[in-house]
Every structure is written in C-alpha cells, then in structure tokens.
Image (tube, rainbow, N blue to C red; front, side, top):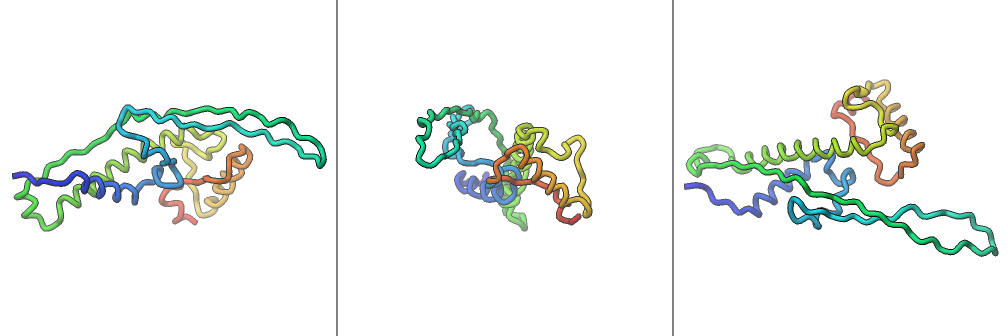
Length: 182
C-alpha cells in the first residue's frame, strides 16, 4: 500500500524551503511581480514600460514646452521551462524509519530545485549586466582578500554610478567566503 499525500500540502512545504534558500531568486534581487500572472509553461507575460521622460530647464514667468507624448515598449517574459521531482516512499519503509522521510525528501528536493533555478537565474542576470559594470568574470573571477574586499565594492559602486545605473534596487552577490576575508 502506498502513502497518500495531499499535493497542496507538498507545494506549501516546498515553497517554504525554496524561499529560505534562494540567492538570485530572492526578493530584492529578482523581480517576482509577475508570478501571479503565470499559469503554466508555455505562457507569455507581456510587461509594459515607458521610456525616459525629458527634463527641461525652468525659468520663472516663462512658458514651458508642450507636454511630450510618452513612448512605451514591452518585454515578453516567456515561460518555457518546467521542472519536477518524483519519488515514492513505501508505507512500510516510512513506518520503519526513525526520521520523517517525507520532510527529508521534500527538503532535499527543494535544495535541488533551488540549485537549478538559482543557476538559471545567475546565467540570465550575468548575461544582462553590461561588461563595463562587472569586476571579474566567471572564467577569471576576482578573489577578494581582507586587504581589497572593500575596495572591490567601492570600485563596483563607481562603475554603476558612471554608467547611470539607478541607485534604487542595487545589490551585489558575493561568494560565501567574502565576509570571512573582511
């Protein structure tokens, strides 16, 4: 006899495990505003945006220019991947275990999904960053030491300032050993 589980309970457990462990997919790193619009793989979400607004000089008691017409554009978020995991726990095996097999299997599954999604997001983000806004690369990484770790962050901030990257929403992802060297 096999175990019967409620799928919505599994999904809740998995989501909790993923949210606590994502690096690139975490809030304030990835835009997750459109998750509710995604129904299934193969869907496309159209994301509308507007272009820059012109800023003019103001002179007191002088007419200003006519209002400009805003330009718009859109991006398509194509959902073209689906991932899954599949395991079976025999009811006799489960009864004979000292640990909760389902919780452990879900934890391990969540970690594997996290690795797959974070690796995917890291590749997408890396490809989208202008080469002038990077210090090092995946093939020739800069490995900070206690003497230069802070300087790398300062240099990166200068690069972003010089390329007019908005201050709001900036973030940096550093390797785990970064805090140990400072």
